[in-house]
Length: 228
Image: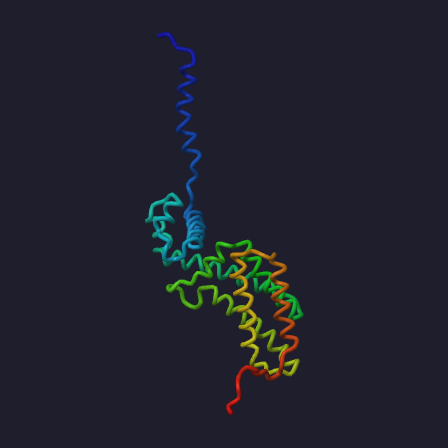
């Protein structure tokens, strides 16, 4: 039989095509698949919130079947709990490790700037945290993180109050007020992104510190009328 030149080469190329396609698909390990699903769910929860997110969409974006998601997390509630828990720990670790200065004003600056930096760098994670879900307890959301931070600030303020002759029992009230001010401002800044985070932190500290430095020992409300 007469061989047609080039036929062997063409056949070889045709055989190589399926091999190239199959080799380009890298099968994920169970741990890698879990991390992929968490990252995708984090993004969808940030975009849509808990109620509007579906396992179908998570599976579709990951290009897997729904049973794969159920196998890893048991359902949407389990997946959401993992995402929120990671964000809670990440934000708390950032703020805790940032509180290293000795002066209370510097500590306030560090806490404010750390929160704003987290919002800037981990916007999706912050959106997940501030979207309250009825399924989550008080220990698994943004409020719980801020409460933990407030408790740390409370110890700092307690010592400062004692040294200045103020009632240290009020440190808890003031710590909640300060941390709440920073947290609410952070939620506002999440949407507007102006001015720059350094300027926002500076203004927050300006308001908080200059107010703290001129505290009245026993403040009263001047708008409350005394009974006639």
